[in-house]
Length: 392
Image (cartoon, rainbow, N blue to C red; front, side, top):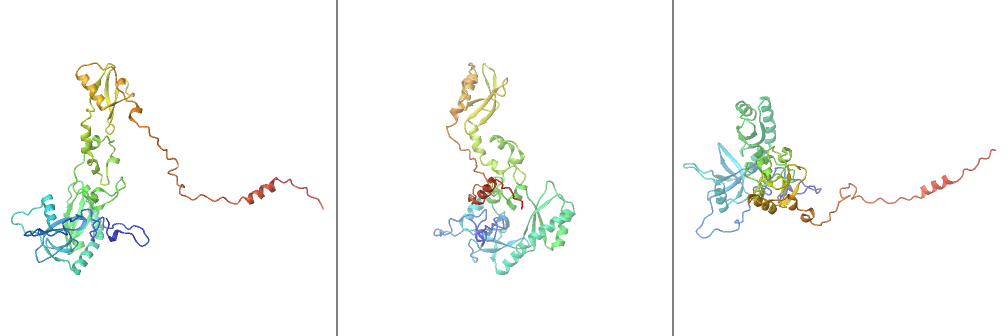
């Protein structure tokens, strides 16, 4: 569900979210949690959990202690404590659900550590200063990239996040190896007159912060709902019988797509019923090896060494039956006796060719027939015999 700023414009065209799902209106954030206990009062003798969840730019969330003299609710802009200053964020969750979120994310305070607190609700001055700092981020990022190129550093500054008071900025960058950016910090501190913090992120985190559209036609999973980035290996593609083509398996971040892990458990559970690909079937005609399997239909294709181009399609139950006969050292004539015909595995379904469905002129209005009266008169004049001219 989009917020008001992501609706349609005056002429009806969709405007879209200009903040990649992290706008200040909290209507289309990718990590917004629905508080299903918001309208319920705590039981008698119970008090609300004193911590609240506050979200900052790019869905960065932290948990702060809210004292009794400050009453906040979801959607309030608050001023929180920060290192050598204060920050401005939005309350996204209150009550007992915050306790569950902190337990899930394993957020705990060390001994002697003071809990971060909410100072107050943001005033108009705080919000104006916060917006002014957010507007500087794009120009500061461009200038920081120029300084990094001047120093010939092998790094890419992908995003900048200003603190709410505008006195500190965090620069997120990606690099393949360790980068010595001490001189870069000096140059940026002199150019921007702020405190600098450099934070290295991975390529997947960079894609989640920038957003985009994947090859499936939908927004990237990492920028919409995915929070934990598990490692993806080529074994996931092998289990799903996918071709190991880097151009198709890699996402916009350059790494293997995270969606390869989504159905991996289902494929692995289905493959338990299949014999191993290295299994060979021994018959009187010769030894056959597996060439291909179809997980959805439960079929396997085998071919003899002497006839590698001739494949025999077998069901999984038939393959297990032949393996059992081989273990019992019972003779098996040939795979032709077990081969499955195409008519047995495919249903009699008539498919429409769809010819003309992709024509560019299929929605055009038919042209009206023009009046061919002029053409008929022209043809009639041509058929007449020429008259001889009389000389005067």
